[in-house]
Amino acid sequence: GQSLEQPSEVTAVEGAIVQINCTYQTSGFYGLSWYQQHDGGAPTFLSYNALDGLEETGRFSSFLSRSDSYGYLLLQELQMKDSASYFCAGRDGGFKTIFGAGTRLFVKA
Amino acid sequence: EADIYQTPRYLVIGTGKKITLECSQTMGHDKMYWYQQDPGMELHLIHYSYGVNSTEKGDLSSESTVSRIRTEHFPLTLESARPSHTSQYLCASSSSGRTDTQYFGPGTRLTVL
View 1 (cartoon, chains in turn yellow, blue):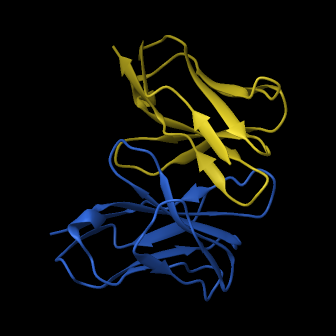
View 2: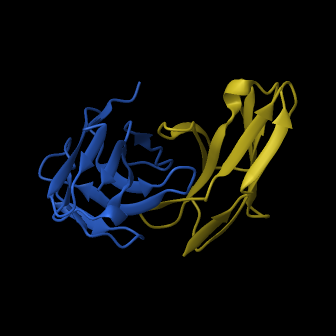
């Protein structure tokens, strides 16, 4: 089986940097993905890590350590529009992708 | 740009009615999914499909059924709607491959009175 743990909510101020952690337990592993979802909207794909290290896409970066079964999403230069829920997701050796419960990010002015 | 569509976007219906939520994608993806999500809560996988004529139940027990007669189409049917079915239903698709990046439709917000 597989499970992913992430904090339920995080608060940060505009312009700051915030890190959202995700730890996973899985019988197999095919990489860690991150999705963003604004209230009332649908999840949208942000990033994917198959190998250890940092992947950077603009203000967003994602990190993976397979030895620690751990990853994080890093958001820099926070903007109010970054207020959303962020889900980590992992695919096990089977077919299904499993989503974490999501972290609600509140960005304050 | 992902092309996955859901209709209707909003639906208010009485208890006991039969409803079908439509989902179509134009990306030729083999895999399709249905999730149920209450506001601010986690995604619950209720059905998925590997491809045509292949459907499986997800982790969340659901009284709905699905069919996959065409690659692009994956409708979800509730035979008898109940107030407990009130939720948002999200359809997604992904191609075969290592990443399994899922593209989500805009969702159907269902209210059963």
